[in-house]
Amino acid sequence: MNVSKEELIKVVYILSESDRNCFLASRICKQRHPSVQHPRSETFQNLRDLFEETASVEYKKKVVTNRIETTEKNK
View: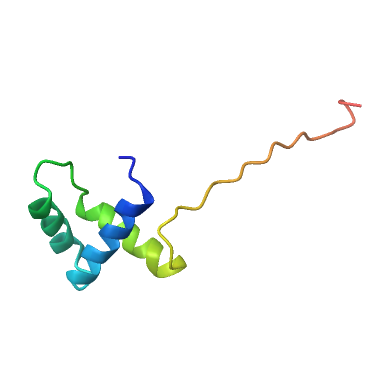
């Protein structure tokens, strides 16, 4: 489910309204926006944990570095 930064911020506000209860936040989101696909309670939990750890709703980008190991055979 691809969501914008603004939508993630709205989810954080809904979490604060529900006293950080992820199940209740999921139900509130479903009631307010019945025609839109709403996040599951696990999604709220992941976002809550991320926000509490980093104070941000942006997910960390994974950095992958390509390493080439040189051995005696490669020389």
